[in-house]
Length: 327
Ligand code: CP
Image (cartoon, rainbow, N blue to C red; front, side):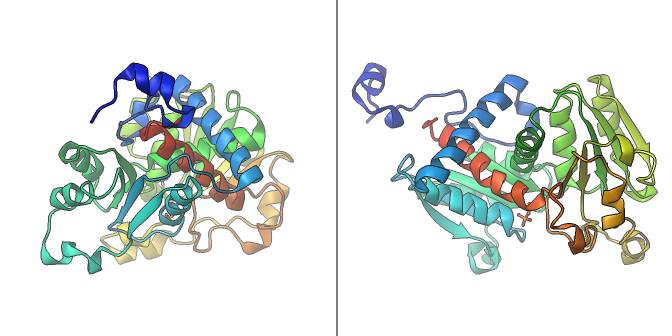
């Protein structure tokens, strides 16, 4: 039964009102967000951070169920969505290893999603194919949150990355952001660059020649007025960098292992690199890392990658609350 709007808005506690600009919406790409949307999300994420610090777990999403559907490995995205739902009082159907689901019997993505929405209120999906989240969203009545679709996008990571920059440096406008590593296959940098185009920032890309940022994305962002430069070494841009965003060279995306061998280990951030960086810059990484940041750097206060993961919890709590109409 659908309650009349006047009852929803006047007779239920605030947390039961099903309203808000993201209520019932899919989160598929960062392209769907305006700068105003981002401020709204970050405001809710700030509130979640405060609530977790003060009371840990609360019942905003009590009775709601999340299906966590992962066709690719994940530690952070999968467990932070699970933790986010549980911190909000909801529960989770975890399908972290589709090998043990009916996917191995040949069930299609759309049938799997249609099945899970019979049991859950929202579905978080990670899948190896670009565009898979959009296909799932087309088939589903319930909100789909894209947790990474192949080399396409990773919108919730980009949101948490931007939230990290804002929390660590106070603002985003006026910064120089340098992205380093695998910029060809790295979905996190594709999504982050698109979001940064909403701000007054400069972006430097540092990568091996064969792992450059996709030229069509660079051209698209240039048209939107984002200043971008491309380099093969970090030296020239490190002194001006406020945010250094390091990425892993992703072995699993290469068809030719000789190519992978030729570029793995191209860049390693060490204590010596940190000496040449600005005193108030931040070093970020979506993780996992496989050698591109030396562990000797971990205790440097400018190394933000572990805090970055925690910010992800608050952003994902905010997104779940918003798509379920409770923020
Ligand atoms: N950053 C990120 O997406 O990590 P996981 O692959 O562990 O989810």
